[in-house]
Image: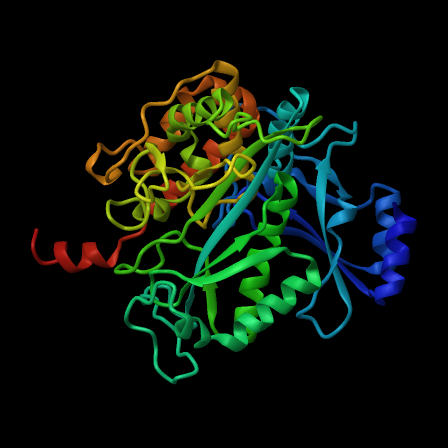
Length: 447
């Protein structure tokens, strides 16, 4: 391993290495080392971090593991060699590598997001199945915001004016930020991030990038790296890129849609369709599992208080887990396709979700549907917004549902769910201490 990386470092003249581990929030954690020291460290299991980084909230505090009594100790990091990439936005040659954490007995750190996803993928592999996914990520460009109490605003484009009207799929609206997007494409190409289509979404300066379909872990890695790339590139252009689910009051939210199918490992055939092109039983059961278990998986798909502001009627976001053919009002959409491309698009997750955990949760729900042979309801032809709300309305509700979903907890890992719950409860308690502008405006002198 070290020799392969050493050759790669020499070829690319790498002098510094960023060793990254995605934490529960999807934030890159880790260490930065000189290239030579990095190579020595990985041979000696010397690249170490405290396991507590996986119990860290998004605010930087630590949640206690209430159901476990594990002492806080170090874990060692093992580089995922195929994820090594030169960092294109630095002047000096540097590399970034995603790492997996392990205990010193060689067992994986079961609360690390990459290992959670691998746990789910191993269940598929044991049955001879291989999930294929294609994420779609939305994000907003906003002006640099130095005061968190001040609302976000759309940035100034090439025309010298901020975007004020919604320009869904507007070509000229995308071209307002053409220099930024040229750099994003260049940076992604340099890193081997396989993005496909760029389009303008409904919000002011809101964009969407689609990824080509492929292996679930590889696409999760790419989405993780893409979010970092977009944020860094935006800073180079003196704007912010945000993946908040609902960053602005009067604009739509940003999602992480995940297209999913399941292929037979031996034949390579998409098991979601029969030979004659009809929907297969596995396809129906996968949707049945999503319908039954997704509401309980919401802390992985909508992980913050802000996430639930996106899930409101008539806002390009779902409010339930009904399904339909080419129906964008449903939480589960089946796009028009041939048998080889038969898939279901999970439209529930927000862009703020950790891509490893969002993909793991969605595939876990579908897996349960297939092994339990859960039949879905009939597809919805009209607007699903006319049907009852079926998703949790706030984070506390989502955590309670996850706590009751034993089959889902067994797949994701009981300890992981315990840690996730403790983190989310701690974040929610911190949020409740904040007095919002709405409260000051309407309650200060009126009640």
